[in-house]
Length: 338
Image (cartoon, rainbow, N blue to C red; front, side, top):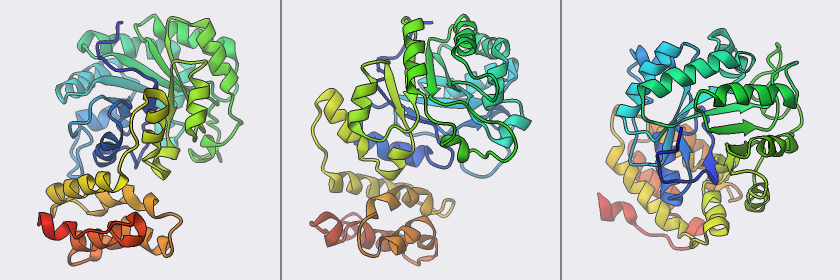
């Protein structure tokens, strides 16, 4: 399958539950025009039987390029999901073969599918027949006792034979036994970048994207000497402007005016905040910019929780994000746009 979109995989932001929603993706797209973004993982059943009145996970802004990550194990259902996803204008469908959660295991999707490469290949094949979108796979290097490069090589061989040309490899195995939750699975066992590099040597014709504990721009450049692209996750949640720092190194782009970006995001909040959503759905993504400032713990609590209880949340938000000591150039933006 040939990539049908004019973008590269040099830099991606990982799908992250509770983080990479449409609001965070809007903010990240303001910061970087080139980075590949991904949705949170959505289970196939949730797409086909969406009866919730909560935020529709298919909803999106003009945030291209963006891939939609699906979790599921039923080839026919995934094919139907792919049609729906494509109709919403996404650029790619990404299969989750890496989530180690109990929910994923009970539904036979995520990391437990690593032991079922033929089923993953069938899922990819069915999707490819129902959509023109490229199909990619995000997986771990192994699970439990299936933890060696030969098994990983066979897995990629099988799945790529169904037309998958891009693999995002979280550079550690997943531990599915009891007592090891998803948070612990992000830090144990130790990271193994070399195995990812070796996979790229074995499959020079495939796009191999490395993921896991990559936090610094210089580290992104170092990995790009060995693989096709780098996927970063929690580091972007802690500092969204990290994308600009990396773009400067990779593409020689200009440094952004951070306050100007915040003004654009502030206007976005004003235009999209209504009684059907919580303002903290927007502002939780800004809490990180206050780290290191006096009183930041209290301010971050406001961004994530307490702002919901303000009578004038927009005005309070303006006071918080445009104060003098944060940007050294406070402005009465609220009075100009209301």
